[in-house]
Length: 108
Length: 113
Image (cartoon, rainbow over the protein chains, first blue to last red):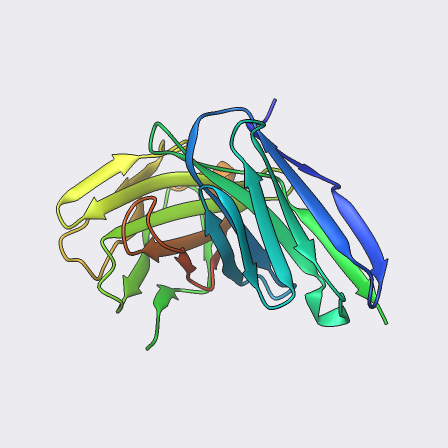
């Protein structure tokens, strides 16, 4: 079983919809990252958080340390948000563990 | 700023050949790391470095060597390539381990025949 589980694996939405991607992890962590990988393959960091909530534009990330769970929300989704979203954790053994990713498609 | 630069972007090797994937960053980041990305498995950490002269193994280090002689450069060496090393490789850097966002290179697609 992977230490980092994401759901859903695939998500299709209509433009304008509110989107939630979930990440659960089973190890102790010092930080959690949300990454975005576009069809061209490049990876961009969206958020790094160790507690609470962060917001950047239409993106919001939350983390609940006690429940070992994080969510990434996209408000007013747009076709340009179509990408693979990856959750990753810095575990307490100095390793970085990644989820398998959530493939999001936003249709106009 | 160039950010994180990886070369080459594409490489085809024969089994047993050696090669080096180059990674350079111009942000004066202390932490650098290498990952491989395989279909259905997500990204996996190969090796990382928390500063010049310091390297350590990640989840899948076998078959790979690294060195960190300068803050800027963190090359990944395959001494004897195997078909199982066919993958897309990403280099990343950040201000420090567990501190600050990760900056990724564009990736290097390696095929071992």
